[in-house]
Length: 300
Image (spheres, rainbow, N blue to C red):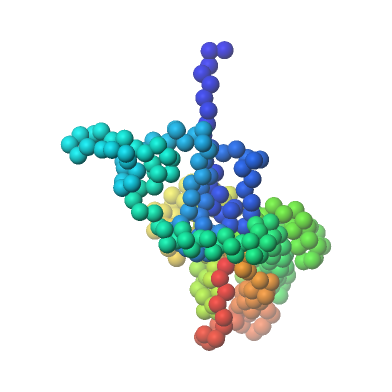
């Protein structure tokens, strides 16, 4: 009865979501939404936006001010009167107007490819296809070559085609596929080794925990104690310590976008099969990479 009612403010980090899907603000009602135009278009870097609900804008407070954000201030006191308009109040100094002009072409490109709904369908289909193909990679002894995180597991005797169809129809896995590689004996292959090998073939992937410690802990089964122990033994974010005590500290991530093609996905899967799927040979070792630089670059 006498309890004081409080209201939580919600800020949605939609940077990754908005790169390949629609955010319906009519369905969801956050106070703030942050997004990155770089993640949507691929260019320009360093340009994003904070969308502020009108009713919540008055709750924001500034602890400093820069050029163009005040109506008046004094040099020998603490008096300052900020501008009334929210964007004018918070956009200190000269905005990146050349980058803002470039964003216009990005929006035009989205229109040419059919809008964000087409982008969503495209990356959802490619994601399901890539997952099913990676999930199907097996060593000569039948053991899986990759462990994929966050996707529904394959059903008993479910083939690649059926698995892909099921995942695509569910449509819940977005535009990224994260995984780790294992050898034929069931030992982990460090994600840094995968990244370095991929780079030799003009394939760009991202590795590590991707600024997402929650997912990293969940899927890699990393306890707080294990993370602290790894830190005490020298592992920090962005280093090359991809395996600690035989366990991965991160994973490989393939990111798909509106420009990604099925041929590029096939190229990546063929790369994994050629260099990380072990066949029954005399040495039973993955094939060594060629040093040729003629392979066209593929970025994920």
